[in-house]
Length: 177
Image 1: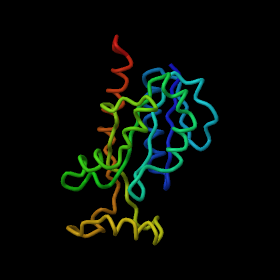
Image 2: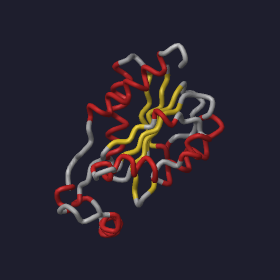
Image 3: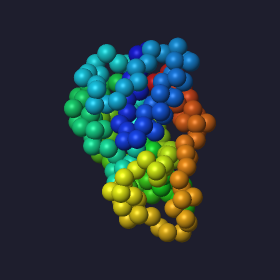
C-alpha cells in the first residue's frame, strides 16, 4: 500500500511526528512518502493518507485547511486519518477541550476522515524558538495555574503515537477496512 504521511508544521515538531509515523508504516512494509502538505501536488497515487497539523492560535494550520479543500474530491475516495498536536491536552479536561473545540468535524467528515480514528497528542513547546506574537497567543489561552516555564518541554508521547498508528493499521487490515 502506498501511503502519504502529510503534515503542516510551524517549528518542525509535527513534521518529526510525520517522519515517525512514516517509519512505523515502513516497518509494516508499506511504501510511504512523508511530505509537508504545501509541497504536495496530487494525492491520486496514494492508497491512503495520514495527515497531521498542530493547533496554532486556536486552530489547525491554514496550510492543512487549504490542502484538504484542494484535494477533498480525491480524499473521499481513500482512507484518511488525521491527527493534531496541542499542548492544551496536558491541562485538566484538555483532551476533551481539544476534541470539542479544535476538530472541525464538518471539514473532516467532508474529506472522508473517520472521526473515531482522529489522533490527539500533546506537542512540544520550546519557548526559546517562538517569537513574541506566539508567546502573546499562548498567554491569551493560558490559565495561569502553573509556571509557564514548566510547559517548556517535549510532551510528545511516542508510544501513544505508535499505538494510534497501529490502530490505524489494524483498521486497514480488518475485513471491513
